[in-house]
Image (cartoon, rainbow, N blue to C red; front, side, top):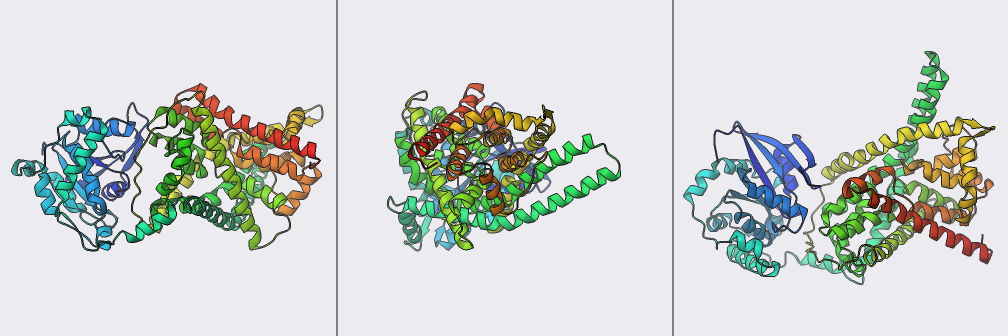
Length: 628
């Protein structure tokens, strides 16, 4: 290591769920950037920090259990560590399960001696009455070992100091650890390699880890017996899902209404200002009644539920529950010849299908990753929830009122979601037995320790990293859609608007699906943003030239019934909402992840075909039985 170098490259490595990102954030603060590694689809974060006049460029490598090149993440981490670009590699370990984490430390040492072990989560270890003799571990490894608790910034100064003193330390200390040969690591079969590493890690931890309370994990074991049991695991998962939806439905109503009132008052002010400064009507009408009004709809409908759903979802993630969901569903995906990690990407799709598609990178097998991408749309994103909830409340709940309405809506919405999950299993199985044949791969799934969620950080992270990010992408595609919708509603052909002409043309085919031309056209025009489907339906039925808002669901139900809606129409619309093409943002993400127009088209057509098939069958059965 050259002390004269102006900027040092420091790599952060570690298993998932060891607090590596917390260490990275604590060291770099706001001086961070994220981007795909050159030549790879793996996203890597990097940032800068200074200590005693020295600048460090810290690269946060993807969390991985191994450096054997079995996935893009493992390959990237191994390549970077082996390249010698890093003056030091900090391997972050979990103090509550040190022995397991030392396996990655040993693998890293086979690539480079410039390693520092960061034993993080000391606060968690203290709570569980786990004592660690880090000096003994340091003596055995022959490299610096620093204890930290990144949440409270404990030990971070010592960690940076160890980076500066690493060259002198390596010259003065001889390791007592057994040697791990790099060629053996890469060439031996996985089982033999893992057995040898586990034995070495066990030897290193002898007398280093002292558990004062042998029952410290008893509570976690009891929780796991309940949350991962074959009998109770999936029912509890569905109850939690229902609870999240109920909180989202109840909590989003009032802020959504207030936000809509605010944005439409701003619209009135903009309109008055344009009239006052004498802007031509042909200019301000498409911009205000088209672009702005659609944006107001998207923001008011999408922002409040996302601001509630994403933090709740992130709290479950921070608590350590989501890996248990993957564990519970692993058997189902295995039977579908898919990967159990698909359960995690499916959960991401609840917030945004584009995020779920990007999350499919965690699946190592290209075949199974493609199956997860092609089926992610069967789980409805946040943008489809308002349509589903409105239809459930108007046609399936009936005259219920008060808390019973929101509770019943949450239960029925959960059942709709459950149907989407079942379709995910069905289509995954069909794909894996036809165009994407293959045997399901095995994978190591770590069940991390349960942790008390950091509520403040969770809220901030979920709002800025997820809510505003997804909302920003929706706004970008909704703005031009608003202009197109306004033009179609206001340009006349033989006394009829283009909107009416197009819906009339689609009507015969839509009737076969239990819909009508207006509904089908609304879904087509809603391709940029699913949130605008209902307002387009309202606008078309009322024959107005701009999007309108009906604040009362009873008033909206009367409008729909007057235009021929029945309970069959409602169910078919819900089925089509659940199963139709991905939005434009999701399609762009699919193309980016697959690099193929063919697979992007497949992702578009597969859910659409199933949606049309189920709508047709349901409508046909209803007509034959006289229920329609």
